[in-house]
Image (cartoon, rainbow, N blue to C red; front, side, top):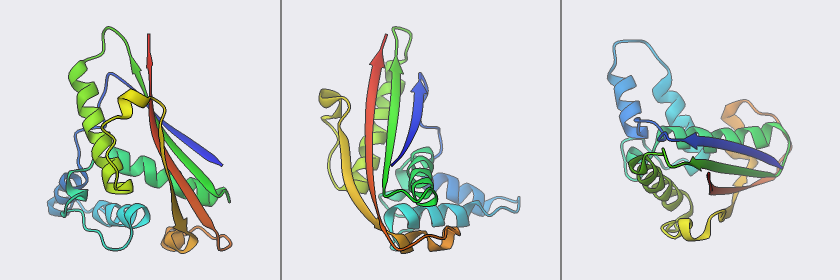
Length: 163
């Protein structure tokens, strides 16, 4: 099993959406392979029928995409069959409630796109894990990872700690 954690303390998942980042890099004057990398990450996580400027991917947070893709790739690289991605959110009396709302909305959108389920009740069941999603090994071939044919099982969840 591979466990990856994205910890947040009074911060959002970043200002970049997948579509916005892809477009900014594609139209920018600097030479970059970022658009190609974004397309590859989308294929790894969501499959071959994706484009960064189409819904639902255009409005998802790039930072969450990299966390999920990184978990899947590390799971495959480590030869494990189960990957778990957890977002750990720390809350205090100084935490900006607007950032918490934005994170929850962004998390809900990502879970909806990935699992096809609504995550609107996640705050009522803190620690709930979505999954498993099964990924065939051939999904990772163009990432350069070499391993035997296997199925990877992916789970995603969010938990909150208050203090």
